[in-house]
Structures are given as C-alpha cells and as structure tokens.
Amino acid sequence: MLARMTSAAIRGLLVALLVALPSLLLPVTATQSPEIVAFMALLAGGLIFAEYSSHSPSIVEFRDAPPLNRSRFVFAALCMILLSILAGHPFQPTGFSALVHKLAFTVGDALDFAYSPVQLTRLMMPSDVPQYTVDLVRAAAGLAHLISLLCVAYFAIVIRLLNWPLSSGAFNVWVNLPLFDPTTGGDVVTRLQRDAKLHIIGGVLLPFLLPALIQMGASMFDPALLGNPQLLIWCVTGWAMIPASMITRGMARLRVADLIEQKRRSFDHDKNLQAV
Image (cartoon, rainbow, N blue to C red; front, side):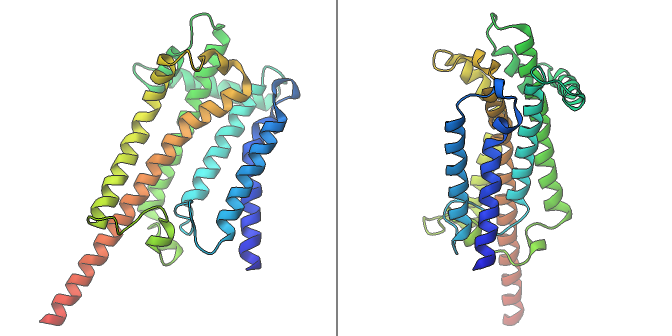
C-alpha cells in the first residue's frame, strides 16, 4: 500500500513537472499565464496520482507493462526540454542553447523535403510572419519529428529484442487494457488488430493532416501565434508526440493480439494431444 502510494505520488509529481517544464526553462520575459500553467500541472499530476494509486486502472492503458508509458514520457520530456532550450535561445543565449539551436536548424533543414510533415508545417505559416519565426517553427518541427521517430523505433526494438511485455513478468490483458471491452461482440484478436491498425494509420497520417487543418481553419487558430515560445513548444510537441503515442499504442495492441493468438494455438495443440 505504502509503496504503491509513493510510486503514484512520484509519477504525479513528474507529470506535473512535465506540464510546467516550458515555464520553468524559458526566461521570465518569454512566459505567460503562470497561474494557468500551475493549475494545469496540478490537475495533470492529481489525475495521474489518482490513477496509479488505485488497485485497478480506469483510464491509463498498459499501466503494468513497462517501459511503454515510461518511454513515451521520457521522449515527450526530452522533446519539451530541447524545444524550450531552442525557443529560449534568442532571449538568453548560452553555449548549450547555441548547440541545440544549431542542431535543430540542421535537422529541420534536412527533413524539409517535398511533402514531408516538416515542409507542410513550414508552408502553413502566413506570408507576413517574420522569416526567423518561420525558420524557428521549421527547426522545432524537425527536431520534434526526429524525437518522435526515435520513440517509435525504441519501442519497436523493445518488442523485438526484449520480448515485451513478457520480459517484465505475467501480462494481464484486461488490467492493461481497461478501456477495451471484450464483451461487446466479435473476436477479441480481430478487434485488437483492427484497433491497432487504425491507431497506426492515424498516427502516420496525423503529422500530415494537422498542418493542413490548421491552414484551413486559420480563422480559428492563427499559425502566426506560434511565434509565442510557450505556444510553440506545446503545439509542436503535441503535433509530434501524439502521433508517436498512437503508433506505439497500435504496436502494443498488435503485440497483445499476437500473444493471445499464440496462447490459443498452444491451447489447441495441447487439447489435440490429449485427445490423441
């Protein structure tokens, strides 16, 4: 009981720090609305604490199947840290921020090829926006997109080489998939595979669709607002990491479906041997 509450408190604190990270890393002159940030950090931390302190999960999937959620948190934190340093460089330049600035602009330039998500992000910016803001958005998008690809590649390695999720012990499907209802009808494996493919397809298409949707709905959200450092960090991180999270979630569900199918084949084989 005490260990679970302590673990939940640490996780909640880390999530709260992640929400407040841009405000903590950016110079005071580049931050806005600290009260709203503090409220959102406390809310997110409280939700995570409530989720992990309970015996059974209610929202968070793969709670007992590390390192899926941990890896997504680490890569999201890495993305926000680097983007905060990048956005804060014009205000308080340092040697390390200059290195991150150079790296981001190099990666953004390399990934800005025809029909790439980075190019679509750059093209959605209005023509009256200063060129440095456009270049900064491209650099941030390139760096975030690279981190999202590393996140997906890391989890693929974990599945293939570390035999996830069996490497961390027994895997309970219904505990780790609290939002999945096995009684709604249809074969469980087929439904898991269908949901997984939808998640992967959505995660692949989302980085391409979001810039187009923002450009179409420019009256609701002006892309020029990305000149604000905090908004730039949050929007670009969400643009890159939400699709990566969807893809890893789909990969995890495909793996679970494969394990269930393997268990079924093993059970049928043992049943046939007993019949003989």
